[in-house]
Image 1 (cartoon, rainbow, N blue to C red):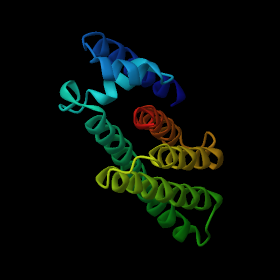
Image 2: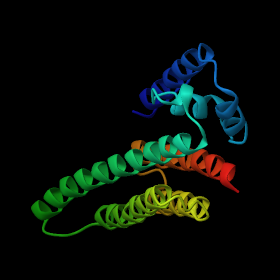
Image 3: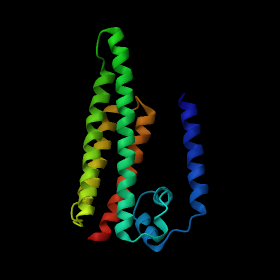
Image 4: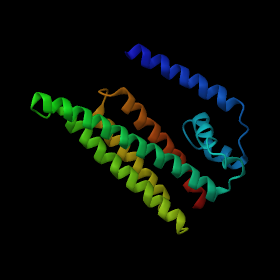
Length: 179
């Protein structure tokens, strides 16, 4: 199982490399992505939105926070499905196990992430940019908190936590354009 997971990760990395090698980022995207830990992931992520080539900093902020929000919401839904699945198993065994506690904690953490990213959207809508970095940081910390309890129990959830963390890093980089 672990071997298959590593093969998928290697294939994904190759796909990202090939996909980003053909993208010519704008000066703004280049500036933002150079301030992240993964330039190619940043460029590829931002260019999943067709508005990116013509985006100013304001639109780029909407794009980056939207990507993070969608990721956090999708991960929260995934956790809810895992939790429901483990509840059914626990009910059959007539006891709640540590797996449910871990998933409940992660669900709660992702609730915080989704809430923080919603607040960032509200700030963008009201054109108050001063707390965008804080909201992105709060969402990133929520994924960290989930990862602390998950450890290596659910490899896909570990990957999702890392994805949200990297998307939040892009949000922070974009947010710094407003300071």
